[in-house]
Image (tube, rainbow, N blue to C red; front, top):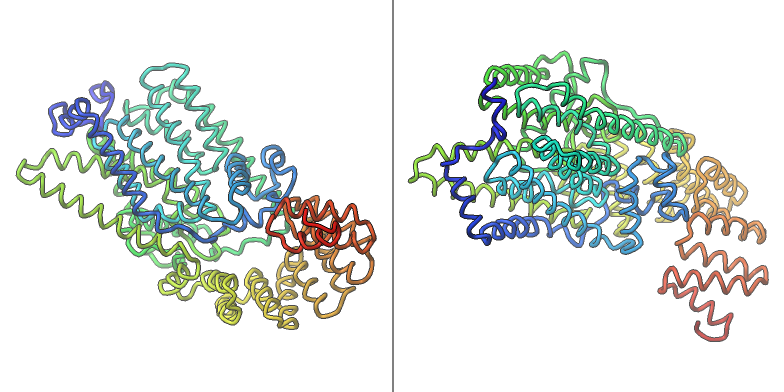
Length: 620
């Protein structure tokens, strides 16, 4: 143990090894380093750019187009100082998305380019981290990360900016911590803590960092002393405070917007224990065999009466025992890489109930951060194996590695291309997972956006065959039927969604719009008011204004449109509706101001432009 405690970089091979010679050559020929950087960047771009120009999918609409803060004039203040205004307290991520929205609105390309660039920056930072850990061929780890199929979901789904954005400060924090551990300089400690705070403000999944740095201390010195624990305490405090605040924000948001309770198909502690083991085994295996990835994997049955479902726990226990008995040598490195992998995965293995568990147990983007630990082990193993090979076999091993990396990149490129279109993506997913009601629902939404309403209705019906109690699918089916002018059927679906979730504000609003088209104005206005009472949002005020205007109650309609304009200040249609109501009230100067505001929001708003021409006698 004393001998190990003197080693500053346990991963590092001997100074006479071939990797060390390669590194010395890089010092003489910097172009070798630049060539490797270009290789990582070029490979990542080649593998991931087929996702462009991209399509909205996953939680993209929740985080951007349907985010209740997106059209709120006080969105920046609420993002930082009003937890519960959104489903999570990720103020840095929200702020970046706010800037993105102001730049690109519905053009998905800009959002995806942001994710791709951040992903490549993360790959290069992984190289730097592996170098600090003593791995001389860390650039290979960066290359694996850049082209690994399990990273596609984090890059190609716009809402997963929280993944790509949070990993950057996390890796910088880890690098600063390693330097602090070497130098004990206060500046490095402050930087590590500062970067960690920024990472936590991007995503709560960074919280295990505090435990990771203790694991690093044990790996480096073979023990965890009081100084290590004392230095880690502020990181634990930050993790607990910001993590707790995020959990509370989610609860407050769910209460405010009346989100339904989760119905997770689990029964008892043993079921959860089996799930945790199986999901951990799935993620571990998927890293090493990433072929045939999917946005929604089949949700296997959890049966604690089946002994085989606990085999992953036996395998994990055996691996821990084996590595611990060899902790003086290679076992210590496996415990570091594997320990990091499972620590970063722990919150996502099934201990906690989260919404995605209603339709699947596992998702690729949860591997984005944990896989770094396995990448480090792979690179360390490759270095050791390469050094052990005879010189005559080394070119063959390099060729085999190149072919493996090419295979990964090809799979990633193929899969990323599927993400460019949601209809294509979920058609692919339904071939893998035909019994997924969520995949049928997503396919229905993709067809509805395309204008194929008959196809969308068919997909929603299939989703309801698989899960008749889904309020979301009833709502989506009602929306498609309403667009197809099948109003009585749409009304029934919205009513069923409300029966399942009584405080379903969007369903109340859509039911009101359906009743209005059916000629039931009083009932429609009652539903609009109910939606506003549940969740005070601009669309409901706008729809209530439409109904009031149709009923000839112009002044009341103007008041509702004004409230809608306050809540959705950047929606041109609301300004148009307010201006038309003002025209009916003979308040022409105010109407002109609203039409001008609509054009400032959307210069392509021809209805506003034509109205202004009539009111002013000439184009503005």
